[in-house]
Length: 436
Ligand code: ASP
Image (cartoon, rainbow, N blue to C red):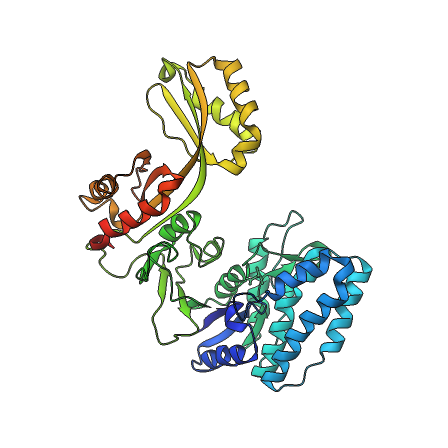
């Protein structure tokens, strides 16, 4: 039995935390493959090593000072762990890479690289470079099949290993990184490659919360959540795990366990393909949302008889490079809801183009809409969840601008004014408490 484990930057921010993370790994012989992030923040005002590395690449005039700060962090770690490690040589390599003129990824990946080398030295485990396991295409996308194949055949040779997260290599061995927080994706890839029984993602929170703790005081942690539910919640702003971390595991059935490094005895959250327990009495898994959406609304009599109308509107939206979230329609009205940041630069052209082509009765864009999703695999099988959602909002005196419940009934999405965002989440959390 093999477990792949990944530790986030906060859990590895200094030598003592690394020692604690290693003790968690050593406490279970099945934890054989350890993926690490770069050192994160030690305290609220601290800077993550990855952020310092981005600055190192961008701020040419501050390079010496930034290198000093980065290597002071690593020197502190090496000292706390009481190991021998030649940091001077590593600093020279980075200086040389910068002088030669490299891509930004070659620099920002060094936080993970060094943290993994140091952790491996402390553990007495082999270090396996992610550049030899994870492959990117020229366009920066993961070369999935090749990656799983290469990672599997390389790691088969190891009893255990420490692997840096966040990066891999592209054509000609050029270092490429995932988007920020991408060590979660590395962990998932490694879990798949070694056919792990579980992918443990160790972080600084007690699993996934049923609502945003910045809005709801002490929301309860979710025990089980399905991949589908997590996708819905994470795209709505609940971010514990990188949103791409699920894809490598989706069809494998390997569960992800999100656990808190500070409370290793707690169960945390299990992210699973299917629930192992009867969820009948807990149809709702979580509530999440995001502010800042715009609604492009087109009203035209007899719209429903114009075949291809909707397709053409979406084509115009797509031609402006806008990705939309929802398209609620009624017989003569079509709405396209998208992030305001994406829609805003194109608002005049959008209105003009649609107006010229269709001469609708009314066309306008309204801003300041929040979307809030109530998510749960059990919503479809339980009577009364939707009623309770609307009742809770009505009782709080909140005006609903949009309701969208897909046929899958995995979620119910409510659009409200941005100024009602927090109030709506609170009303829903309270109103749905017994379903959570
Ligand atoms: N260190 C990288 C970041 O800060 C990747 C990660 O930690 O997952 O985004």
